[in-house]
Amino acid sequence: MLPESIEFSRRAVGVWQWLLPTAILALLPKCPACLAGYVLLCTGIGISMSVAGIVRTSLVVLCIATLLYAIVKQAKSFFVKEHRP
Image 1 (tube, rainbow, N blue to C red):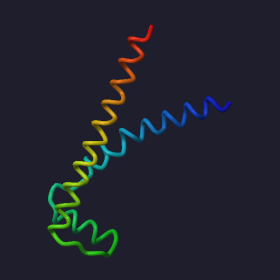
Image 2 (cartoon, rainbow, N blue to C red; image 1 turned 90 degrees about the horizontal axis):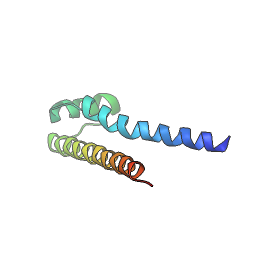
Image 3 (cartoon, one colour; image 1 turned 180 degrees about the vertical axis):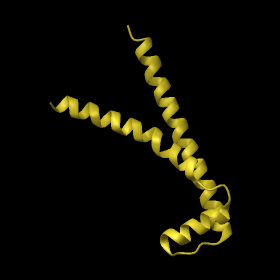
Image 4 (cartoon, rainbow, N blue to C red; image 1 turned 90 degrees about the vertical axis):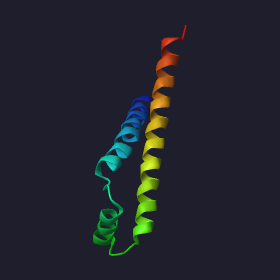
């Protein structure tokens, strides 16, 4: 029973590894003013436009890096399975 739960956990992590950065990129506002407004509405804390721009750029870079890591990991596992004797 334990190996099935471990396999389920690995699959769940794999799904979230793709889903979370993709959803953040899709839902992230395109302008820093909108991001600052959303932060203000959700938390009650105001941030400046420059901070909102830095946070937005950082989120985009982090999400793209995470997706690239997932692509490389998936490609590596694909090629290792294909060429295994």
